[in-house]
View 1 (cartoon, rainbow, N blue to C red):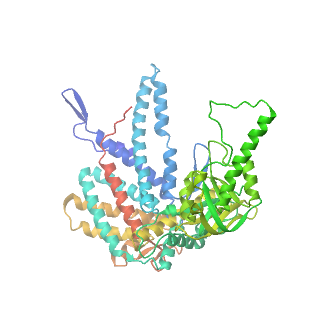
View 2: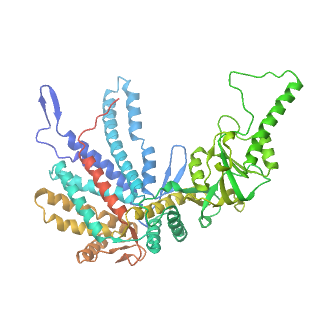
View 3: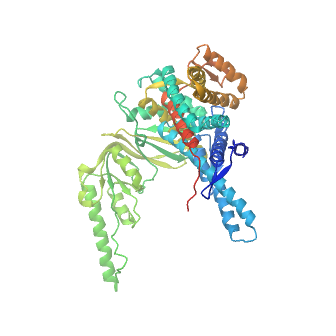
Length: 573
């Protein structure tokens, strides 16, 4: 930890105030250790930025492997796989009981303290990435890289003797000015402009593992969002109205958008697999004989009693099925039960004879989406099973997926609740999971444009423009503020520098030329990684929502300010 060792030392390392030793070096060491840990995390995800970024293979403690270059996913897994604090603490406790290794115990205690500090900084950057994922859905890698660069700038400013509070306040001034600059270089967009929405979704997908399928996934994402909102009045998008169903088999080319309901559960009775003019009921009670309480038991002593029990069971179930049929139901969805069998073989037999399609094992968390999609209401008791509780649809059928399984599709709902389903296909679990994450990011990009209807250029153009404008702004300030604002602007060059480096270009010459172009007033100049040079990035249709850039800048600055103000770590038992 060279930075920590390089922490500036006070004239007096400590003094005795009434018997209490005060270590003046400790706050500086805490700050430097936090900055070092956070920079290490930022460096770990740096190589994943941009269309030419590398992917990470992550293996968790269960042996499950994830391949991704999504910043939020990488950091979420990193939090799980951050063992240093636990390992060192275990070693410390193990040696604590050995009286012959006091020196080793003291060393391990120090290491445990340092590991805790590192874990705290890592946790803050993980939370930063999560916040960006919730707010904007995209830019999760960029926000961590910007935070790492700003912390590096803080480290240099601290070594010059500038107080952390002055740095913190100057950074707030810089981010306020930065938001102004970004808003000034953005251009408004209408939700009716499908071409701009497609360009934004395509830019988001370009850096993903499934980027070669962006021509399929981008229109699918745009259509999905447009179908669950009213473009004229919408100010937000509830992504819970868009259900992503993962089904192993086929390729990503087989992904499709379905206006209706898709269920991965198979039809229980093989006799009925297609129903037109469907009337759909959703029940939350069991179609099986009732069971006694755990403390009770029934003793059957002869065959006559056994026959009577079976007749009563048969009569009970038949009455249930008749009431379902009487209501006009021809498609029955049954919620999963943990108490007893939700559907007995006898009930399935009766339902099959009455030509009622049955889909069982419906998960509790899917109930709300199903009800909203097909307009049905969940029925908790047979007495409430009436025609008013049923949903209607043109067609309910079980679809064969070319030998790789089956799906149940319910389409043509008469009272659709503005929901859609996206079926994601793939040859293996890794591809499907990455496709799902990519579609989620594309959906979030369109959601950003619904929330804030403005676009901004990509390719590092906003960050270089900020660096140039903040340098100019710093000349209007005086004293230490000017140093800090200039350092803030210089730190933002890490994004174009990383993009160039990951694309195999010379980062120094590329950033220098880019800065020169922006100083001459070419605000839309950015790094074109496809052609390997600098060009007008808007003409290349590389655009992103303004909200993504503003969110990344403000969240990164808030996190850096909070880390900067920490001067001690207190461990509690």
